[in-house]
Every structure is written in structure tokens, then in C-alpha cells.
Image 1 (tube, rainbow, N blue to C red):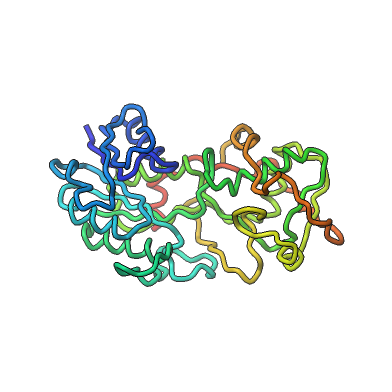
Image 2 (image 1 turned 90 degrees about the horizontal axis):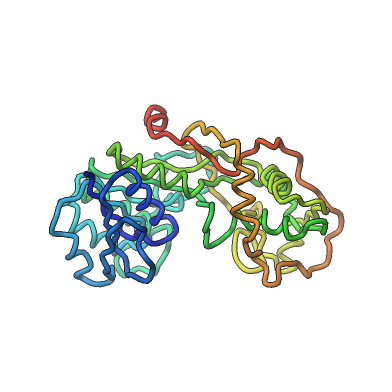
Length: 338
């Protein structure tokens, strides 16, 4: 039986990874603070990764696979110092944010990483992920895989950046909905379930090296058009320019009173080469409707109180087959493409 240790295992992504390994027949141990239940069928080891003895209870045996998703480089350094010689393979879930820049379309895994954070530096997510990658590869060498996902979306997303649009349009029904007037904007996401499957495939194959985990780059207009179709929205889409939105206190990307997924033209955003040709599931829209129809809008009261901008611009039409979830990511295809 494969022995797998998940450093985490009770959060949004790491829980799914633990469940996938369990379903594959592995004996799964999750190391976490214990504030949430461990997935059924796994063993929970309660530990605080801030403590020097965090890994004592799992350092007395050999592991086939260790998975870590931490965004704190000190935690990753400490884990590798104790466990690197006790595992056959290590998968670290990093982020495309680890790259030094994110304004080069089509960039791949050869792009430069950010300057790694040093112990004691002020926290910077980009630099912490880069430093964590550095710690894993230095300690494990050819026994390490680094997976760099883009924006992760799907059921249970605590940020709800993707589900917001279906929920908002469904709630509006026949009423108008404010959208960014950004004809050149694009969206590139990875579904949380696809990512969990991929991380398990990486570990099972003992893949080594770094790999981006991102989907196709899609026009935001097309994604909004499909979200509108999924939600059954029949009202107007009221487009507003970036200057108008900013002037009226509407934020971008995520957060209170924001329009998620949108970035102004002067704010760079990653557009990486997709991981592989992806076959999209036929029931994608039904799945997302089920998952997103009850999501809470990001604005405080579920509506916008700013005045309507002059003019309006609706997203262009898109085929009903436009994906809202991808299926069939296959590590073998990715490896063949490298």
C-alpha cells in the first residue's frame, strides 16, 4: 500500500488531494492544526507548523509521497529538513505567482522565478512561494515535483471569484448587471478537482521537475456570456470603463465591492501556456449551476448602488459548449509535450 503524507489535508485544495489519494487506495496521513476534521478514511496528526517539534510524530517512518501546499517558506524549509530523507517523492504545490513577472503571454516553466524570500523578510506571497520551491528542490533534487497552478476555482472556493458571476447573474434575473467594459480581458483558471487529480497523478508517476497547472486563456467576455446563459439571466449587461469603475469605488480581481476576475489594462496578469489540450465536459454548465447558484455575491448587499454609466456594452456571444470546468487532464500528455 502507498503511504502518503499530506502537510495540511483539511483545507479546500489539500482535503481534495487527501481524498483522491485515499480513493486511489493509499494509506493517507494528514498533518494539520486540528481545527477542521480530517477527510474520512485518513489519519489526522495534530501539529502546529510554527513549532520545532511539528514533524516529530511523522518522522519515525518512511513515506512514498509527501504533498505540501504551504505558502510559508519557513514551514517548507523545516519540513524538508526533517522529512526529505524519509520520502521517495515530494510534490510541492506552488503557484504561478512564484514567477518574477506575469506580463509575458505564453510564458512557460522556464521563466525566471521571483527573488526568494529570506528568513525574517516581510511576508510577500510571490517570494515565499519561490523560496519554498527552492527549499524543496534543494533538499530533494530529482525526487521533487513542483506544481504551479494558476487561479484555482470550483466548488467551495472561499474567494468565490469565479462563482460570483453565475450567482450574481442568477440573482439579478431580469435586472441589469454591472460588468467591466474590457474587450481585451482574458481569464485563465484551473478547476480545483482537476488540480487535485493532477497532483495525485504527479505523485503516482513520481514526476520530477516543475509544471504549470493552468487551463486555456479565454476571453472574459465569452466567460461572462456563458455564465449569463447558465444563470438564466435575461436583463441588460451594463458595461463600464475601468476609469469609471475606479472612480466609483468598484474594485478589481477580488474583495468587497469588486468585479472579480477583471484587471484594468495597466495591471499585469499571467497568461501562461496551458498545460495540455483539454477536453471539456459535456455537463459543465449543469455542474456550475449546481455549485454556484447559492454563492454569496461579493458586494455587501448583493447589488450595486452606483449610478448607471453612460452607454452599455454586452459581452459577445459564445458557444454553449464554452467550458466552465475541464476534464481529462492527463500527466502523460503533459510529459510528452515537455
